[in-house]
Length: 161
Image (cartoon, rainbow, N blue to C red):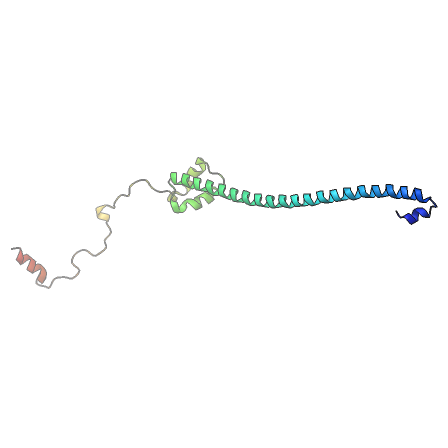
């Protein structure tokens, strides 16, 4: 509101002064309220930024914690599979085939399906004598001269007489 607007209404100068004073008080109250609300808004923006930063950090930490828990559960399950005599190089495929069902029944069922993945606790039996593998042909590979024994064998035989 302007003083000229009130003068256009043909009001006395005293009345115009009083109206302008009341109007100034109202404007000052509103300006104070605006300043307080602006400060509060800025503080809330700062708090919101802090919250978003904290939220992102919390999500990262939660992701790392979840990954750690899964890794720890997998390690414990690998140890359990070793207790079930699963070969060390077959633990990972075994875990993949089991999926989420990690019960003893599922493990035993899979062990029956893949017996070659299980370590044998029975001692290995040596092959029978008649079935021994031959790494060289039997006998002397170079035959002695037509006279019988070779010179070295003859010399040894003479030395022991």
